[in-house]
Amino acid sequence: MKRASILAKRYAKALFLLGREHELLDTLQSNLSLFSQTLTEYEDFYHFILSPEVTRREKENKILELFGESFSKYFYSFIQIVLYKGRQDLFLEIASAFESELDIFQRRVQAVVTSAVTLTPELQREIQQQLAARIGKEVILIPEVDETLLGGIRIMVDGKVIDGSIKGQLQKMRQFLRERSAETLNLWQDKATVLV
Image (tube, rainbow, N blue to C red; front, side, top):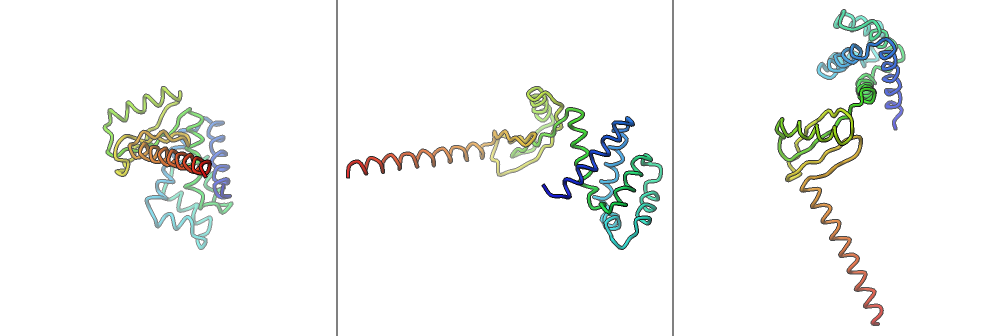
């Protein structure tokens, strides 16, 4: 794991623990979400925050000017610490790691459901309910479309893949046939050796 990812997880964990201690998890999630969304959507702001030529104080003042009373005092303090440590390049990773911490705490998992065509809302709900019943956690469904699947769906939950796509089945069949062909070839080679 890269050092930056480890640091981002540590900052996220610290913010998470702060939020839990002060019963501000929803507020901090909202603050962090708004801040990271702003960094993502406004390239100039993102470069301003990351710029080594801009002082920490200028960055803090700009954040205060843009967000005013939108953020809790705890989140402002968190931003100040991250800026003081020169880790502003980790804000987006921190946001992602914080969401992961929150998902674990709230017994939620994200499931990426990939299909060849867009799934109807009804089918998405059905998949979500079946997964929730199967794994015993709330499921946040993230639908994706991949036309190369040909048909069926592929689901990824907690690093595990459930591949019910036609493409996946064809790949399994291809692998099976290759293995059987190799076994048959070895069998024939063994028989030929015995005959010689």
